Image 1 (tube, rainbow, N blue to C red):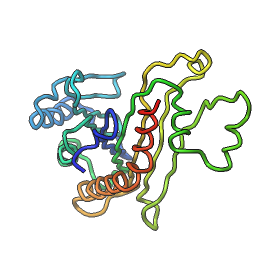
Image 2 (tube, one colour; image 1 turned 120 degrees about the horizontal axis):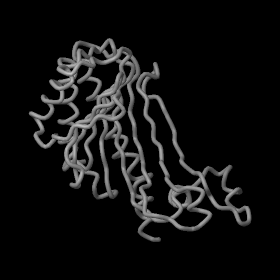
Image 3 (cartoon, rainbow, N blue to C red; image 1 turned 45 degrees about the horizontal axis):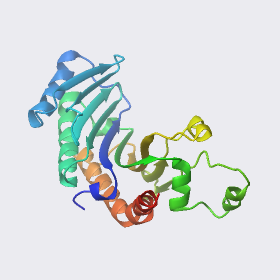
Length: 247
């Protein structure tokens, strides 16, 4: 799959590395890391500091696609909104993984978890929870509750987590995120907001091998793309897109 733009309004890929020990915090080290990213991606020229605990370097957000990278005390996060192809996203995330160990003294021993997330957003004006229930259905045990007179569905964000190995170190999570509030339902005034589908593949604990970061990332990215293509698209994205188009 080259791109997922045909299945939703926006899609994105995020890489997150959680560490046991704090990352370096001195000015020279942090700037050296960001300068290396900027050299590879010159459009990443906007540096922001949020509450003195998070630094973010990103491209301009006024376009349809942009990259970003954030550093916190014990976390590195990199994202790519609407990449032209998945290869572009994979190349960017691998570059972050290749750069971080050298500039930030990152070690495969000092890794609590590494995540690869694929997100899919649908713009919709209405009750998100009702939309998700109508498009995907509800468990049979919950169906009778939908028939209660005058009832309105206020929360329905299905999710599941499953393991992909015997030691439960490799896990996959699929979650639907809705943004409809109680007040919107009460007033029946709905702004156009995103209904989100999140697919996250996570590896817990110390990474294997000398090149553990890249090896693990390849496993996470390949697994996420396989799950997205074979399960998330036909079972979630396409039904949601169809339900929205019929409203």
